Length: 231
Image (cartoon, helix red, strand yellow):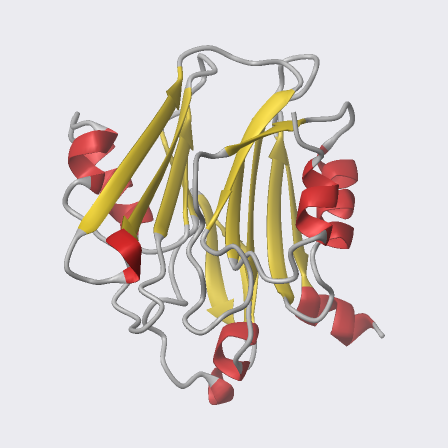
């Protein structure tokens, strides 16, 4: 298994990332982070909602385009946790609430319409039984003519193990989409605060924007703008 913290330290711009898995004592783990290069992307914070979290403009006066950056990354449907990098969170939530499958829901979506990057849509869900899924919808060969959809499932808890997926592999023009399968990573003992601190430290300090971590029943949110406010 890969050391996730070293993996992230070697990648100054993975974009947005999802981690799902279980601690060594079988507590569920979920994490989601966003990074940004433009002022519009960096002008965001995570805040809690009744059923998860949402992104919000830190300074509304500086918000130039809410599309693709303002959404609910995390929502619950009963005891199922849905995590995504866009408004497909709502697509999944609505489908699951109607008794439809996550496959059916994501088959109605594609990569983001942000030429020339065609940013992948990454999605995950974790159920109370411990089963989980990750998905990536990306442009085939970086071209918008065809969307390739990849779905990965694990039907039981995997103590001490998780899987990570992100939107990008690093910097470039256009930005290179994540390639290959989700990365199998070792998950440490400890609580949400410990994991959040280690993930936050592993993310590039210039590009990190916000981080959400769930371990068991405990949630932690870290926002770069809050750090700036406290300096």
